[in-house]
Image (cartoon, rainbow over all chains, first blue to last red; front, side):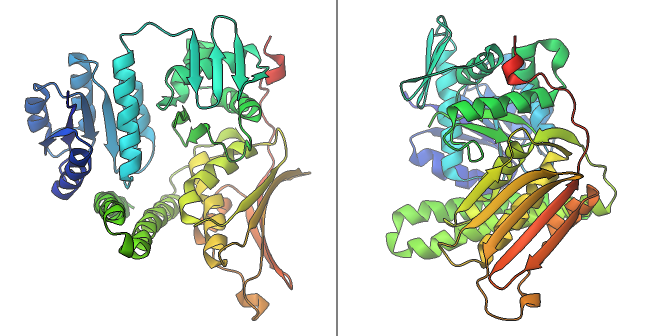
Length: 227
Length: 206
């Protein structure tokens, strides 16, 4: 079955470009230039939505919230705005991922693959074994290996790695990670996270100052790459 | 500032189309690969330059810094990730003191370090490497970049301008010091040392 993707952006040339890129990869593309058109085309139940936040007739954030109340289909936010605040708000209120313009076609396609895969896996119960690149996590036995070699993690590092691995390929905001690891009371303590991420990188990365797997999304959070 | 923010916002969509179209054509027209590669690279550089202009305009307008504690390693890895595509294969070797923390506006500080690395890389012949070190000194966090000189002329003309980095470092109360020796360029960012918060260390999880 061909997945359909709804592209919501008021820039005609950008829509045409994205249409060409996505059609070539076999996706069926629906184009909307405004929030009103997006709502109309949203009824066709696309598999994924690419949503620009700067729309002419309504704030893209409102549209995101509306789509999220209607379904759990993945939404990737496209942003040309300066600053991180709108991306963090979008992610914390239900967007699955974001791309900052200008972005490459390969970045876009990678994000789409990950989002669609997670959407398909949503129905499957959590696997006891998680594998991301060279990292293998046995959740029940609390064991982690890197390229087959055991890695000794502290309880917090283990919880952090599991959080990231369960959403491998997708960005997780500081708040989501802090809440997942330390609980709701610590959601503004980003320095906790930074110190423990550094420690985790020293155990799972060949060169922690040039991480291959656990990458920083500046001002937003972290992503455990899976490809 | 508003004018510049609007301009930056409006330019980002066409930039996506330019670099995306050139990337697509690269696979279809191998003979034009190098020229198209240049278009992709320069579009990326325009995006990077825009970020620098916006940051400088924000600082000039008095937009306050959003300081946070971070580790030197995190800051440097973020900065290098942002300029990786602009370095065209030039190597950066890093030496970062373990557990060094600093209080900066991370978004700006990454731009500052990225500006130094990108500028030094742009002037360097392919294959030349840049070394980057971060260490604590008694009253400052020092981030030092070194690269062999690629020119043979007047040493006073060998130091490129680092306008974005300079503006960001000054806004943080620090200073940028450039030196040129017979064979090397040395650029130092000195940021005032502040007392770090108590963070439960990873070894003390329990």
